[in-house]
Image (cartoon, rainbow, N blue to C red):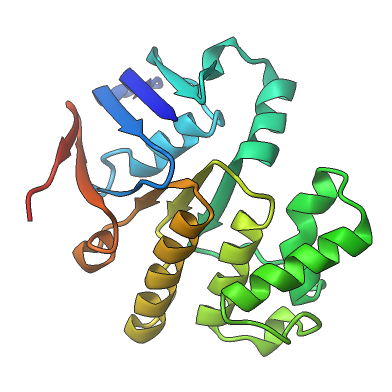
Length: 223
């Protein structure tokens, strides 16, 4: 479903540097992997490349057979809206919208009518343990609950690939464990593939496979 081949990225400037080379990754539907690595190893950069938010120096990325390098900006934007789900450390929940309205945003961008978007938002909020909280405002929720909203928003439109960048960095240990378990369960139950970027070994162990990103590529960590 996702095929990354020989990916390389460097940054230009007064002190140009290579981030990584020879990154290969193949993901099947329902597969959930964690990517670990030292600070500055390029974990977030890798996610940005996979999402088409940045361009590699060389190599290829294909999602369900679609070569990202062959797509223009409009096509990449549509691809992200329809086939990707994103979960970030900072939640990115809009404070002036209710919980269900936040979750329904991806559906609104895809032109789903209000009643259907509300129904689907309510349905997935039940799945993430926030049933009955549709009208709650973000200020009324804990950090763990806000991240549950973010997970619901990432999955509500049925993406093929979920990208999670340090999703528990702002949570206490108990909330983090609950969110990680929920994220893994929901990604798989929706038939999506998932990539979790984390610095935490405990978080990584919730995935099917743990990979380490180095300057020379990805390698599988042994348990």
